[in-house]
Length: 282
Image 1 (cartoon, helix red, strand yellow):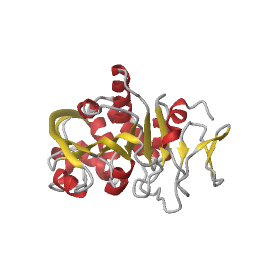
Image 2 (cartoon, helix red, strand yellow):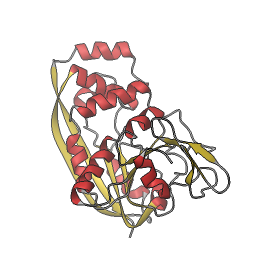
Image 3 (cartoon, helix red, strand yellow):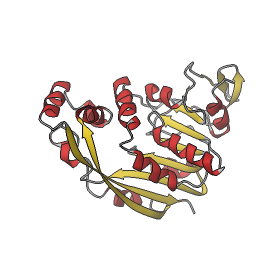
Image 4 (tube, one colour):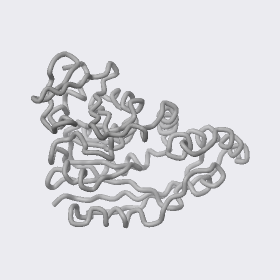
């Protein structure tokens, strides 16, 4: 199909976004279904499986993806990546809203070290993020809309990840295999509290973990919940990348961000506060 080994490895899990039929390699660099729908593999190694009702206007811009890679590469959110990896028992793993594949990559590397199945699917609506995720040799990177039907076969994923990302409860349940786990990371209200007002970031609602359990009531059962709290020490460049990599980037004026950063010390203590929740399909 292509030299993108990660994509070839997860192709049996993927379905056509138009007819939900199985996808197979049709020719070099192309996959398709029996109904004749065809999809080109991009030269960067990712596959676009956007359906007729899919949205891409919520996808991260090139600058957001670059800022995310800069911030994550510095290791500030490594405790989150490790906490997620510790809770994953089996692959293949699907991450919805995967961005550049940072968390999924950590999970797959951990699975490989245990001799488990290290295959993964990174779903994201941003082609800029998909390009980055495709660089990991075990990730099949797919452009897809998290708010639409996911291009994943029924009960195909032993593990699904949702890390600071949107969730459609019915779709997550549909793609999760019997006995499979959904691992979710949600922020506490005081996550990054020291800088949210100064840098114009969006506020965080109370009760996110509780609403998570309620959304999956009758579909998935709670199987564990851990609060993770750390103090980060972030420089002004770190803080700039942190604001620009998330949803606040769409609301913060660059000039206002620069002015806000100048009011802070060279290094600012900032609270990392998240909940890692596990739900199971029993």
